[in-house]
Length: 286
Image (cartoon, rainbow, N blue to C red):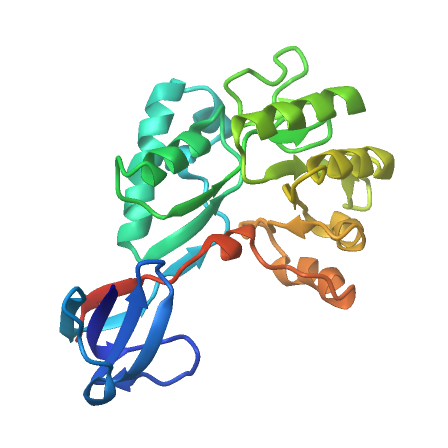
């Protein structure tokens, strides 16, 4: 069966211009079968569906490759790690997933949350319990004393409710990766550095090359799961190791972090892209 979507104005994403009076069709697999003028569209079959959006603007669903659903409007690390129980955070994550899809984002990557919150939101959506985007979900960040998520004093440590999992050696890192893979993550997040800097302002690496290679090798054992969270100087190492990255856009000098990867000619496409099928985003046509 084919669904015929009659569009007032259609933006396909392939060109800078829009189409007027066009129809697109997609099958049960969700893949677009045709885009053409409505007058030239294939005939509607007996079992086909027609969606008349001739007064609306239609465009492909958007992708957001860095969305932390469970964080809420956090103002501090404590807001993320401590101040709400895990159950509330899961409900909050589902609430924001619905906000995301209502804004036109039909595929997102949730790179790291406490517990299995992102995984649970993903599963609830996949099971049809709630509307939401396609979610590529990670578990807790793998971190060290110099990495993101170990931001409290040493006498407090990294709480179990934190978004991070502190690993103190390679064996602990491998075990955490295996646990997350068993839990069904789509990707592994590794915090390659944090907030500690040298006198010259460069960041201190959270993992050395041997540790990084060990984690990536384990993550790739039978799958393609590893993702890293690089900031500034560490980016070149990730490019050389063929890892995919999530730059933190709230940090300064964003454009400087992209150049080493470009020069290394490495892929920098989000994992969510392989899961995406295009859905129409509709809004009233002004």
